[in-house]
Amino acid sequence: MSLKDYSQEEIKYISMIEMANFMLIEKNKATDFREMFDEIAKLKGFSEEEKIDNLAQFYTDLNTDGRFLTLGSNIWGLKRWYPVEQIEEEITSTPKKKKKKKAAKRSVVDDFIEEDDLDEEELDDAFEDDDFDDYEEDVATDDDEADIEEDDIEEDADDFDEADSEDFDEIDDEGLEGDEFDEEDAEEEEK
Image (cartoon, rainbow, N blue to C red; front, side, top):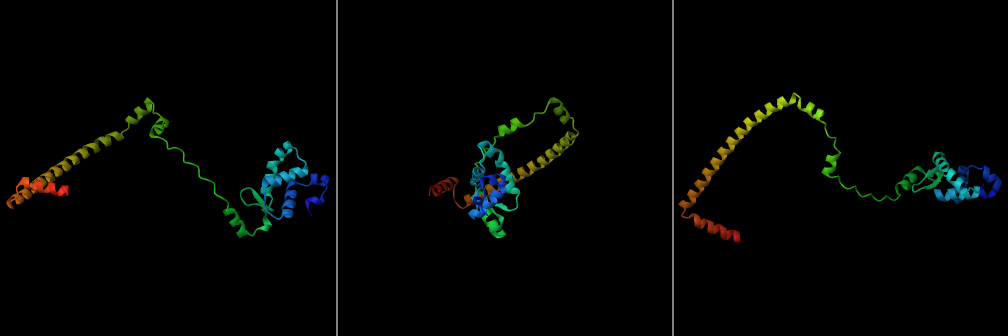
């Protein structure tokens, strides 16, 4: 049966969801929600205020009724028209939305301003901790280690200086003078 077979008086008593079912069966194709609602509202003779009042209820009824299926982009069809595999393909083939531009990065100054400032009591409590005693001991140990490392560095530097002077002695033994060596190096660098 189609909606054309009903009188205007009978259409007033048919629910919007039943009318949607009849419309989809009659058209035999999926339809845009807004087009479907506008056609039903026209057949029922809704005023603009009645359209606004019934729009949300009609959408809710379509979602909760097991006979209807959304194919994305607000297109609705009858569930019996589509096998399960085809439903998944139809839904996944909808166009993707454009990505929004990323919000501007927050600056370090913004982060600093947003941080909660500690009041004087909180600062006093923080410095009264016993953990600072351990810190002072750690610093003393670190200083001893630093002295050892400095001694190692000085020894390595002395070894390096001795090696350089030995190399120059070898060059002098071969008959090259220091000035000749510098001129040859300069010529090679220019090439």
